[in-house]
Image (cartoon, rainbow, N blue to C red; front, side, top):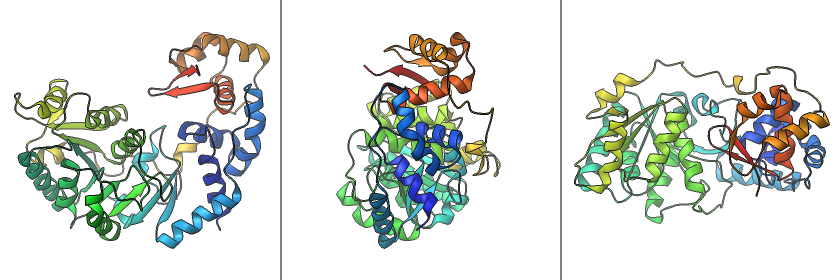
Length: 360
């Protein structure tokens, strides 16, 4: 088995190590194997117990199960891992994919919307996905009821990517079983969760960031205020992607979110031509090897004074890391090291927008 993959899998599946912590560890230590060896000491310096590490036996069993299922692992910064997704700070360190991986090399557009969508909206989504497919665009969605299902159906023959909230072997919702099986053969199903993982409420926002990160643009069709679709649109905007929305009747609550997006500056979409007009030229995104490019030399330790200053600046309310660097007077590398130690010690929470807080 691939030793680097096993080490990466052990790291990302270990207790308390999320995508940002994974990225920080690899940037600092150069390899997952070296990071694994350093984790216990870092956690102790952060004032907590070392996280429970995923064992080599568990990693080997997971790799064997994925291979037996006919799926593959993709690691961030390597091989066919999607370049657009790799640009996200919260990019999944490891993806499990089943189907035609060549779709990841093509231009992708996310398409999301209401689960209880109207018949007219589903028809529009299906037609828009078909038109985009004829233009060579791969449609990405979340395998949910309503708009997601219509988008996948419209792009089934041209190429569609389904982002699963659970494992790629879990059919959710159950009525999409045949659809997902077909996608895993002619399209592609992706997930960061291990095989057999049943989706829970917290998995859907995590899934949404993959949809937002894969596409050069995100099209929203029918979305109520405070819906998951608007969360995906916000994530896409934060990632620097084009946000587009299909307008709807002001009398329909399902259209209020889309109309709000348009009022706030999203591109109004009436046809595939509107989407194509906003797409960036191919090759815009960084190469797969760039996410872990070295910057300033990473300090091997931070002084007690720096550690105290950083901890004093932290509190229960999220604060931007850049602000902590500025107020502490320490170098970015020293601050990131202290935050990494606290994170591995279970004393730090990371939030969207590069903010951190002390764990309550």
